[in-house]
Image (cartoon, rainbow, N blue to C red; front, side, top):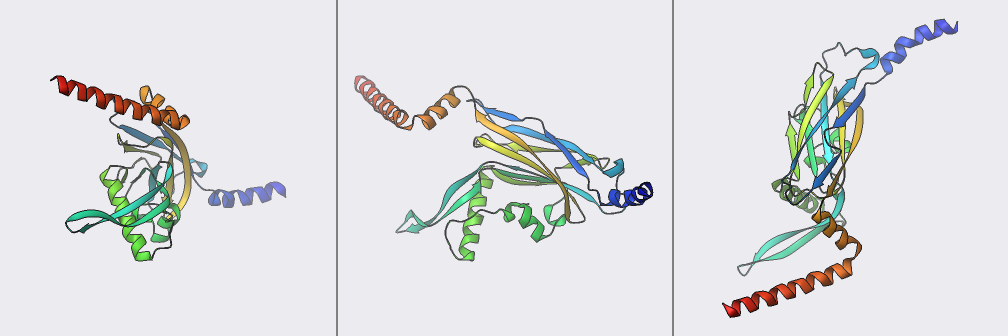
Length: 252
């Protein structure tokens, strides 16, 4: 009886089983030196379907890859012209804005999932959860959020790449994400989503470390661990260089 029950249940369990993602990245660690001009990450992997069989229906399978940098607190200020001079006006602080955000997908994201799913998984620049620190009116929050996204998009720190994910034979996938030279250091995540018929079936994450190397790393560590001596040394060097430049100008 047990064997008969297992035999009857096996097709049901197999039908309920979900596919699994096996992702990886070309670099688990990115080192920033004085000559760093940016990097290109290759994100690749495979989709493991239950029983090793691809779905035989007509529903399309899509993949979305999201690379995020560490979150940080940031204040966005508006400028306004007063008596012919640009001055700081209204400001809004965000508690947890990602320092870097890149999304690559097999199709435009609005053709893959609905607005609710995009908001849940933060799929797309207009779906980022920025966590404003003040209770400003929704129109004000939207205006500042658009401003923040625009500023970081122009710096290459935020961008979308629809159609950048290639899927081969319905099993293997690959995507390339550009890391700009101005990328912040810290712990990054590369998260892959398998989406079918508008639903997220599987997700997997890989960690990426971005850190300074060489003399830049030594300076960053000194500034972080010995803030007061580092600040005094910088001021002293500035005074010394200014004095030296003045003496040279006098002799010339």
